[in-house]
Image (cartoon, rainbow, N blue to C red; front, side, top):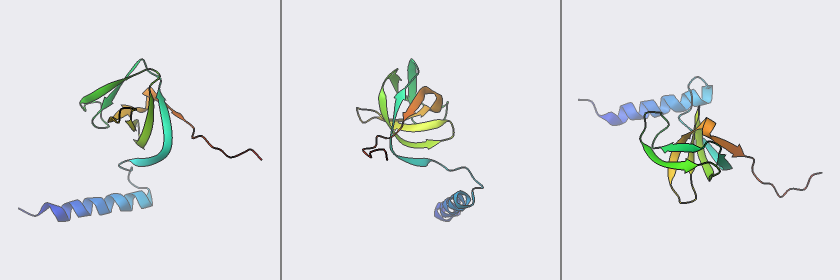
Length: 104
């Protein structure tokens, strides 16, 4: 049986090449300093970005979360209690980052 490490390194290398060339979808896009608010009555925070993933916890309408990463159709979030999960993109609305800059 062949070792897994070379295959894993090849997969990672191919993913990063794909990201650079734009030929493959990213695994996840890291998002900095973004907040979001739950806009659905209830939003399931899942262990992974799939409808089939286990529900880790549930968020209620109006809950504020920090967006950690995004991928098509999903956002990885962290709630005020420090819990992390993936929510369907249509269940949350991103809030633009606050800026102290004065308009010119």
